[in-house]
Image (cartoon, rainbow, N blue to C red):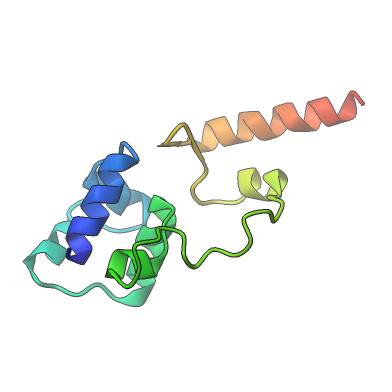
Length: 116
């Protein structure tokens, strides 16, 4: 399976189209289609795409069949304040959260913390 086929397969499984993946990775809307024409993506580009899709670069390259093989211990706590405050991808139910939704969630969590 080629890099393009893997990207396309994972995007479909995540309910995303290739234009959305490209845009969320900071690429032009049609950038991913070049990889179907023999263009080899550079590592920083692959890393951005892998981050958007929630898989490892090794998975996209076909070096492993484990989607998250480069992830560290799954039991490491996630700092929601950091995830919701920073730019980048946060997802719910397989769909990316908008910046407005992330801000609303962060405000709600801070309000709830103040009511302890």
